[in-house]
Every structure is written in structure tokens, then in C-alpha cells.
Amino acid sequence: MPSHGSPRKVEGLVEQFPAPEPVHESHPASAAQRSTKQLPASTIKRMARSKDQVARELIDAHFRVEPALSKIYRIRSAREDDPGEPIKLLEVNANTVATGSVEPFAFAATKDTPSPTIIAEVTPEEFKQLEEGEIELPRGWSLVGAEPFDRTRAA
Image (cartoon, rainbow, N blue to C red; front, side):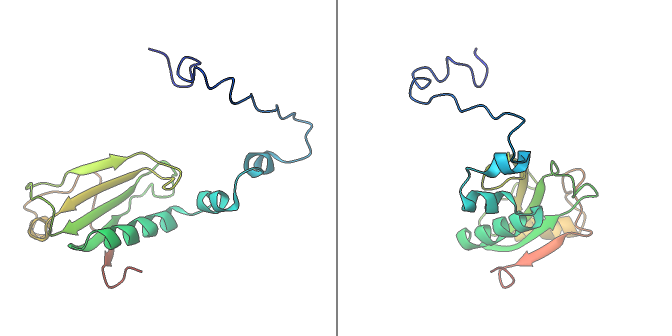
């Protein structure tokens, strides 16, 4: 199987899209200027957002699309400043299916969400079970230090 970026995967497109002009090290622009020079301003702004901003945008979006979502906890870790550390959200949603456990789902970073993300949903009853120690959060997750968001606080 060819690897990503293999000429076989883009067969027929090579002729349509010529190779980019090489950038020579003697070019006066800095590496940062060269890397963002041709990007639209909206893309540059989206790339410059902090992990906190991205997390807040995700939280607000989830409240907009999930009417039964009552609370979201942003779970933080000691490695939160590491760009590879995922944004972790525990969502309390009356419309989710009760499983009797906390099942996290991981999402890779994208251009709109530049941090990897892990989201777990629980019912309000399961959240009570979490608080009472009857079920556990995924390893490395804790509600101690978690930032709660509720629908009234969401923008």
C-alpha cells in the first residue's frame, strides 16, 4: 500500500497543480513570515488561538447543538501547557445513552480545532454515580481542578 503523499495517491493531479516555487534561505522574509505569507487572515487568526480559546469555542458549540446538555467539565492535567495534551471534556447530557461507565472518544487535531480532543458523555444519573465514587473517570482524569461550564455561562 502506498504511503500518504505517494504520487500514486494523487495520480492525475500532478499535472494540474505545478510544484511550488522553492524558497531559498537567502530570502529576506523570516521563516514565520514565509509560512503565513499566503494564508488568508482568517486562517492565521484561527491558528493563533490558545488552547483555552479553542476549548471555549468547542464548549459553546456543543451547548448550541445539544439541547439536553446541562453541564460540561473541562478536565485539566499537569501537562496542560503541552500542545500535544488533548482538550478533555466531560459532558453531562440527558439524551446520551447510559452505559454505567465513562467512555471517552478521541478526536485528532484539525485546522478548526488545532488541539487533539477527548470527549466523554454521561447522563445526569451517571454523573451522580461519579460523584459518589460508584463509577470512575478515565485514568488521568479528575474533577478536582476541572472547570465547570453550564448552559447559563455559555455564550
